[in-house]
Image (tube, rainbow, N blue to C red; front, side):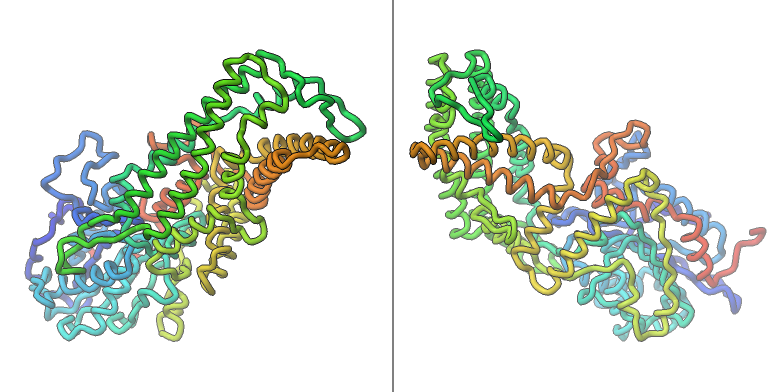
Length: 601
């Protein structure tokens, strides 16, 4: 009975083959997992081709509890490979490979070299297929995502190692959503069989293959977990202010429309008491939420600045741990200075709003006075200001410095290995196998928005290839943010509200300038609103249209990203290629086998 793909484990030595006919060649299918985490730094985590037998089987087969088993949730693909194994006399499945799964060029090189050594017994490794070392063997490699780049490193080892068996030839490579680099991990055809075919399986909606995989990052995952950095985004998401409260309170005074200008006759005129209470209560609640954001931001900055000790695989370093300061002292000091400056003004604002709320009287102009523009609004505007053309500003200059320091390598990826195989006999032996129609997003009528989105991102990629310039990096960041729900749908409403406030404030400024009563505070409030308008326009300019679909009829597991969201394209669409061994992929792979079917097949 053929061994089960899900139960075969490392360390097993394949049996010595029986006598072969001229056509019955030994065929070995090798499974190679991809990156388990784009910023993985845990040496205990693995991208394993096999299920750990020490982990108890889960009660729900759809939710395997072995975190390292890369193909655990890909049951249809595994079952189709097992059927092929039963169909042919001399077809073997090698699932005894594991590697760190780290998004690092170095780790991928080590993983590919180790895989070759593991199979044939080189560089101190025991040969898994000891009995086949002098036999003719056809190798079929299947790798998902960066597993394909591990395979490329494998081809280099097989082509250059003196211990690689001369009769072992690579007869097929099946790339599943592999991001093909222009510089990193070139394929080496030295150990290819002359009949080798390259099966390129890809999904159009795969954001990771097309864009995200360009970036190989330094280890960061451990420190993010240690400081619970996800809480920062949660606290930011909790900061809410109903702009309708401000609009209702402002409109509750005696506002007149003169020509096309809003005009408030008396800045001391009172808002309606109930509307004023609602406005001030809303602002105080928001300020409390903002304080929580500042507290969490400081915690993360301090931890980044201290640095982390993170373990590394022994293959990479003789030391058990490495230390990395994620944020330099200078950069951390800049962030802390800005946060302290703004929050100091925030304290004054909070006290002023509490006192006004207690008084029960809410002058129209008093609301802006209570903001304490010189202590709070001025440093806030200065810090958050952004230039729409250059995408620069104090905050974004710091963010760029931080992001740039996290990039280990940038190499623009492609969805085909054509460039890597150009000039070889195998350039004409690439079989493109798009499986876009198998993705849940397909057929939902959102392709126009997606095409616009990915086209914009790929244009930015071209600029990043020339230089990791600040404008290109921030353009990429703002484009991704602009397409995230619920921000995308909120921007239009936000922009309309900002337009209304700006129109009113400009009118007041015009009237006051004529009367000679315009203050620096008036100018600053207008500048603050204009800053908000700049953000609204930046996001609106990058909005490619609605893509996210929240339809209960779509089959989604609890906790999975919504179809059409950025996480969906980065994770789920990236995994569409490995959900199943689709008929056309199976037929192309089977066509490369040169072993005989079993009797009766």
